[in-house]
Amino acid sequence: MKSKNKLSFWQIWNMSFGFLGIQFGFALQNANASRILQTFGADVEHLSWFWIAAPLTGMIAQPIIGHFSDKTWCRLGRRRPYFLVGAILTSLALVLMPNAQLLTNVIPAMFIGGGMLMMMDASINIAMEPFRALVGDLLPGEQRTLGFSIQTFLIGVGAVIGSLLPYALAEWFGIGKTAAEGVVPENVIYSFYFGAIVLFLSVIWTIVKTKEYPPEKEEKTEKKESGLKEVYNDVKNMPKTMKQLGIVQFFSWFALFAMWVFTTPAIAHHIYRAPIGDTSSLAYQNAANWVGIIFGIYNAISAVYALMLPIIARKIGRKQTHSISLLIGGVALVSIFFISNPMMLIIPMIGVGIAWGSILAMPYAILAGALPAKKMGIYMGIFNFFITIPQIVNGVIGGPLIKNVFDSQAIYALVIAGGCLIIASATVVFVEDKDDIVEWKLFSTKKDIKKNNLEDEFVNSQS
Image 1 (cartoon, rainbow, N blue to C red):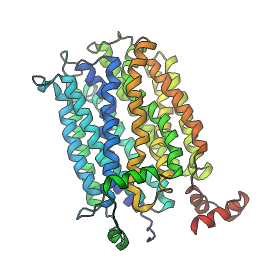
Image 2 (spheres, rainbow, N blue to C red):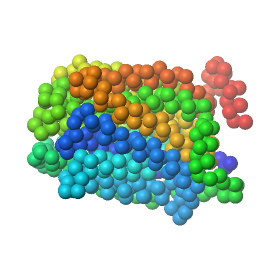
Image 3 (tube, rainbow, N blue to C red):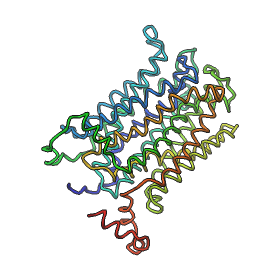
Image 4 (cartoon, helix red, strand yellow):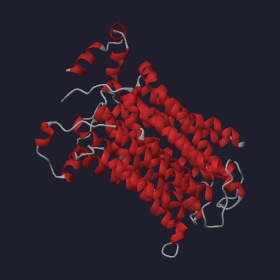
């Protein structure tokens, strides 16, 4: 296989820029989907069931997209056709979801909203998975941490804007933040419209500015297995590092799902003192808008932290960096239980941002070095199982658990989420990171390497 050329900072920036728009839409979904579904009539204990649609579609879509993007080559390249299709479909879903009440003559609005949530997540996955694979395709091992860190920075920027936009439109531009029962406020609707535009244009930027490597001759002529059989064999033979990271990812994404689903009702009841189940009062709307603000804060922190990750990882290693980051995030989520002042929520969101920044970058940087180059897309798609399965499990048990054990007090979902991040932190130490030795060699002196008995490992890794 040909060695990969190192890319400039701006080449890496351009190939990841579409992620800014994708995360803009994802942030709007994360901060507002529960609010929209409750507006359409969903009870708090049923929210997690609607949210199952998102990871379920991702679990199905990402391996399929990964498999076919590995086999694709056309005028647009290998991954870029999927960027384009995903951007078009996601933009359409962003426009339709907050307007589900317009179709209530056919189907109840909350089911239409749930359907749009499913469509949106499936579409985001069509675009998102190839972006992960593109870093593995184009960057040499020593630039992967940088590549995924730049992706995380752009994810953070997009998420900040997406999270803050409903608040900004209401408080700075006077667009209505309340509406009649069963109708989504105008500030949320217009935010989704704007998100659709940003998402589409940012993905187009990456498509225009990025070139991909054509398939090698042996890749074109090698015997192909049937699609399902090949996917099955790839799952069966997944690398050891991938299995180990699966445990870390399970607890990480179980926690994130709980945070995204239950933060709005948790903050509304626990801090703003809105009655459980109330969605139309000013207290609830103020809480929901503030959740958008603090979600923006944690995404802003993740963007800044992403730029620090390559430096920290060179000093202490990728695994240690990820473990410490998850621990900080776990403690931060648990601390929300003890907060009564909305402004104080900014402090734990700093910790959540540190964990989120690491979750978006470090597992992929660790994983990419353990994957065969020709299987980058399919294995990045299969890796999504370890993201979607914990969300589905949480979706099934989360709502009933909060209702029956904690009397519908959603704040306890955040406490459980914090505990899961702490467990994830502990499991990182068991992960094997074969590629980490390469960065140690590149950014350390020979004397340092010999001191740590790493010289022989590096030579073997290059053979």
